[in-house]
Amino acid sequence: MKNLFNLLIAALMITAVSCNSNNKPKDSTEAATDTNEKKLDAKDSTEVVDDAKYAVEAANGGMLEVELGKLAQNKAISPAVMKFANMMVADHTKANNELKTLAASKKISLPTTLGEKFQKDYDDFSKMKREDFDKAYTDYMVKDHKEDIEEFKKEANDGKDPDLKAFANKHVPILEHHLLMAQQANDAVKNKK
Image (cartoon, rainbow, N blue to C red; front, side, top):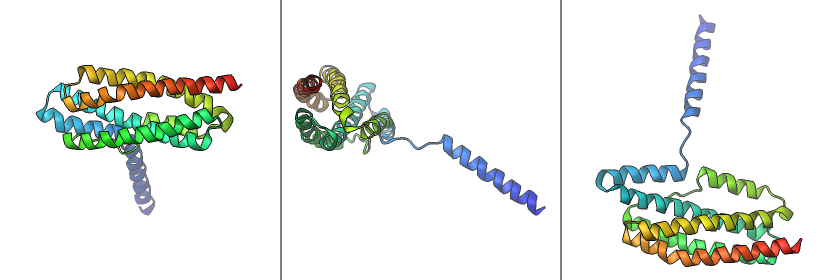
């Protein structure tokens, strides 16, 4: 009887552990999006929910820019890449703080940590050898800034919240400058080889 009881307890523990593994906690970006949808769906239109999604994605992307910039400050070999990384940390920290203040005034929840995809990207960069880092980082920054510019332009043109539209519009030229600097850093890395 005692063995049967122990076996039953063990089976219940295995079931509990396996059930909990399917209920993986959401990452910070998913949690912020879900919170915003619950808050905003009840009282606002789909357009406002779309503005909140933009804010969440912009915050997530901004955090990645800062974290990769900090990583580049330690891993980069090229002076052009280091200069670019310093700009990323300074400019995106400022933009992130501005977005946090704006989101708080709108009662929009933002992520506090990188989303899973961006965390994986960061982890991949952190494992790179220094001699491989500069090219991979600048390639990524060129691609990422092209995507960011499109998203910010979309919000600036199609967003419904006037303050978020203004934020996006203000940052499009900054992102375009970042893209130009990323391309120049990328060229410097390619020409060095």
